[in-house]
Image 1: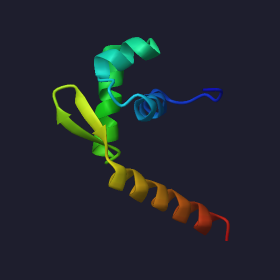
Image 2: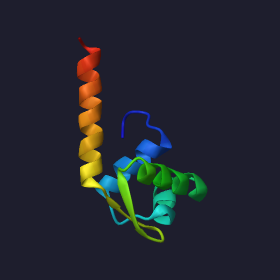
Image 3: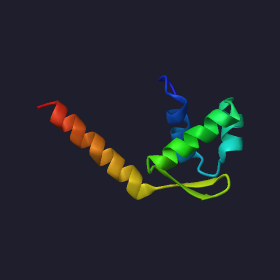
Length: 81
């Protein structure tokens, strides 16, 4: 990753590349604090981008991701007018 991303963005991007990583593994992979990574997973779930399947188990929420992208595109289109 060449750009500077927030921890939430790093967690999400890495999760999409390696969806088997739970919060513990993600914290180790990113060299971040477990509680911060756990909070990022919770926020991503709250935003509808991830679905919690069980304790420490998540999956991508593809409909939520698509809706989020559509909202962002719509906002960008409105901003360029």
